[in-house]
Image (cartoon, rainbow, N blue to C red):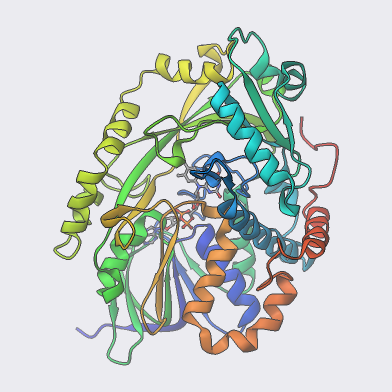
Length: 500
Ligand SMILES: Cc1cc2nc3c(=O)[nH]c(=O)nc-3n(C[C@H](O)[C@H](O)[C@H](O)COP(=O)(O)OP(=O)(O)OC[C@H]3O[C@@H](n4cnc5c(N)ncnc54)[C@H](O)[C@@H]3O)c2cc1C
């Protein structure tokens, strides 16, 4: 029987924040291109991008201690913090452009201002935090950061955390008011609504089962329509695999040389959510602590004010754990099925190297509710078990690959764009810093896969993202201008919050 192939210009696999961002960029740059989206679930933003599945931090290195390192000479390396901050500014600019152009509305439904704080205890950590503060607060991107090791000041900043604290250990915090809470689920849904209004064909409950190169160099995507049970074949000149944790298995199916010798290590997560409105009302910040020894950077504990469903709430976590699934809605066979002859040695090497991490994650899975409460009480000494429930967060699949520095089977904690040499297919792997840097990462996809169009697209990109191609840290006046204008457009400058 002959297969009927339906042709299109671009196929986006997965309806998460990454496909949403790439689709929205492409619709502005090449409005005449036909785009189709295939998503296995019934709605957009249901996996990692969903508001309950991630921490909603607009990562700009204002509070995350793992983006600054103490060098052997005792000084603080802030280069990674600058990089992450600059990447977030790209997202702020693109979102502002979309709001200004009326392509999305009501930014307060997806982004809210919230102070970002780092909190440490113990003399050594306090010294580190002070040095970090000195290094960052002199930098234009981190202006407005405050430091305090005065318990009276800390009581004003974080009353819930300081209340009933009996420890005599030194304690200190930094605070910067220009932090954000981002509801990436709401943003993803808004972007897909916008794409639908621009005639992008969005197919929910359509699972991509295979991707194959055709004889003319384009890609054939085999799709299972879950409701009807039909199999469809769609071809496109360009395919983006934005399947989140599901991207690695799809990338492997393409057979491109770039997909070889790569593995994935899934890390699951849990948050504790406060069900007592009085406790929620007592806290107003995202407060990041320091990762425990042996813990991966993504399991740094934090106590976060969040805005979900137009309501202020309070989450603590994430507690990392191990699950063999690559997606929250995935299968227990995901990990084992991803082991192929070409990556088995890479995976085994990682298994040996990351024994301590695996042990840590298994210990985390075994934590009892009371043990989790003990960790929470390091933040809120008076926390009561009955005020807190557990929610299961999304899965993060960390990339394992062979690197020059780390050798065979090195676990990566960042995001990686893997593309074919001719740029006709690209996949996004990894999960950190994640959704906050979606615009930066999707611009990277455009630069890698469409170099022939970049000259023609550049003026439009600069209209949407004025700092595109410019270092903000080296242009403090431009940073100030952009920070102020995006803050106004996204409603971040309001002193009063709409929700209490
Ligand atoms: C616990 C946790 C905390 C996090 N905290 C933050 C944070 O504070 N700030 C931040 O910026 N980022 C954070 N992240 C990362 C962020 O959530 C992710 O980077 C981002 O959501 C990934 O978006 P995505 O579009 O790639 O994937 P997803 O949102 O997972 O979307 C992928 C989509 O592809 C679909 N799909 C998969 N396979 C197929 C298939 N075969 N066919 C069709 N569809 C398919 C899935 O159903 C899903 O809808 C966190 C992540 C986790 C798990």
